[in-house]
Structures are given as C-alpha cells and as structure tokens.
Length: 274
Image 1 (cartoon, rainbow, N blue to C red):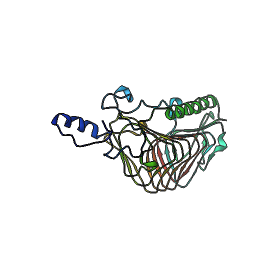
Image 2 (tube, one colour; image 1 turned 120 degrees about the vertical axis):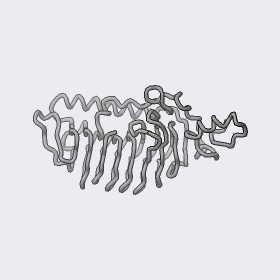
Image 3 (spheres, rainbow, N blue to C red; image 1 turned 60 degrees about the horizontal axis):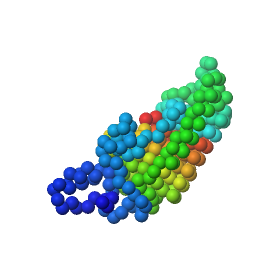
C-alpha cells in the first residue's frame, strides 16, 4: 500500500483510512523521496509503557535530571527564567555566566534568582562531580541511541518542515533542518517522535513547534549532529540532544530539555523542564 491517504472505494476500507489518517502524510510521496515506511498503528508501537505509537522512547538516564546540561558552559543575558536543574561538566563553575549564582551551604550546588532549581558544576563538593560525570555519559549514550534508530521517513520536505503535521515516527535527514513556519506534532500522550538531523536545526523567529492531541514534550527527541538555533520569540517543544551547541536567541522559549555536548547560550529565555 502506498504510504499516503488515497480515496478508498469500499466501505470496508474506510475504517482503515480513518486509523491511518492521523499518522500518514497527504498523497504525493514521503515528502522527500526517501524510503518512508508506515508508522506503527495505534496501540501497537514501542512507545511509553509499550502502548504508544512510534519508536520506543530514548532513555536519558541521569541526564533526565537536568533541564540544561552542557560540557563547556551555560551563559545567559537578559531576563532568563529556568525551571529545572542546570549542570556543566567537565568545565568547572566558571562555565556558568550571567546567573549571579551563589553557593548553597555545603557547596554541592549553587542557586540563582533566575533558576527554580539547582545549579551543578564539576568542581562543586561531592557527590556532584561523579553525578555529573554519569549524567554527561548518559547524555552521550542517549544521543547515540537516538541517532541509531531505524527511520520511518527520510529527507521529508528536503529538510524544510514548516507547515507540516507529523505523526509519531522516526524522521531522518542527511542535511540540516529548517522550520520556517509552524510545525505540528499530533499524537497521544504515550506517542513518541525521534528526529535525526545530520546538520543544523534552525527554528525561525516567532515560529512554534506545536504539540496536539495530547502529545508531550518529554516524548519528542531532536537529535542533531550540528548546532541548534532557536530564533527570537520562537516556541519549541521537546528534548534536544545536540552534538554541538544550542543557542536560544532573545525571547525564544523551550518546554523540554537542552542537552548539549558543547555549550548552551540563553538570552532572556523561558526554559521549562517537561
């Protein structure tokens, strides 16, 4: 069967069309000439609890304890607001810039007026250093896991996915991905999305990544080999696993996690753990 919604002649096939309509693109191919495969049907996937559609979720391990985790630093300017823990390692506490943090008694973590959570660095008192080493290792493992999943769709939209409504599945690009206009992810609260991006991920100014139908940001994974740029006032959902940097420009927001193997840069951003 072609991986798109076509007119079904018989009443007996009408129900199948209804079921598939939530996960299949409109007729015209897979949006990029790749080897798109049919996403799993409702209730038959490897999603959260074994009940969701799409791939099995990515295990973040100890990295899931952080809303922002980076190896070489986290910096902020402007009126940033972070809900969740921050961690940096192997860089020491000098890798936090712009937070005006102060050490909590015991020196295991720091606190800041712009962070509802705790700030951890590699040179803070034990057990913080070993905990961060584990978290960073788990972040790297999660990145490798997400990058290695079998793709359901390849080269969708030739890397430009604005305006699309995407069902739970694994999507892969051999290039960067641009989101120039709103993109919608439609699915249930157990459904899972993985986006495998060989280049950069860029979300244009004012653009939204919209979750619909009960989809949750903790079940959406953006694995990027290149840098991630969330332009001004964009609204992003999901867990970013970046091989390099994550830059949030003025007023951009994220409901999810920013996990970077280099640095995270903030500029008056609301950042909220899912």
